[in-house]
Image (cartoon, rainbow, N blue to C red; front, side, top):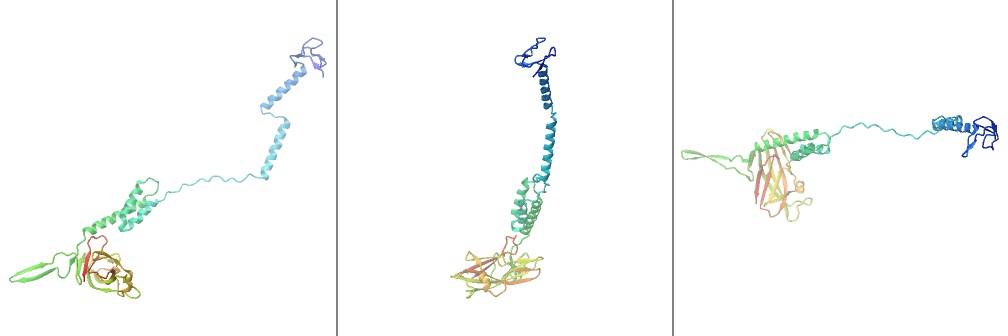
Length: 313
């Protein structure tokens, strides 16, 4: 391979280390300094600079285009798996809490309205973002029940005897009036009145049952008959279970469904309209050796006063 001298430009054989004409050193420190070697090194340097600046050779550019075309065809034949896009959730309005609903239910139950009031207050104190309308309604209903109870207790009257409450008699030239003192307990065929409601215990009887219904060993059925007259301006609800309590010789007597089934007379259950009456029987199972039976009747669940009737054998 021939070499060209970088100084005089003469061409000579490649095995020479210096120019035979001008004596210029062609190979110094093992590096070929000939013109041809310099041009080769210059071309390599320019190629490296093109590669680093993003300019690719023609073959490389063609190969890149072919690769891109192949990738597009592959994607068209084998599409990527379906990816579900996230759905934007719409904020849901907060509803009433379970505590407020429970408070509303308890407030409607007159005897348990105080529990509803407490639950409603607790729910209002909890900051959970829930609606509090049910708790507000529960507080209003509970307060109305409480006001009604206070009014019923304040206007409540005590039972009084009818028919023999006052008696007029003559002593010589003077006329005196003797009045019977207030009583708590009434007997058979005595009428008690409270808040324009009159109650009379008209009869009672014992029974040992039948083959179908009979009391436990050592017990007996006791049936009592009552007449209730409603002279008030509102209806009076009567329940043989909820309105009456009985005590035999000071012990609570159990209401007996067997006695109710054994008795073929009318029972005391229903609502009495203003100006109307009701007559019926209630039955209890008591020890056969009983000597005193006391029956309490309450026509108003908000009242603390009761009609008390006593039977003594």
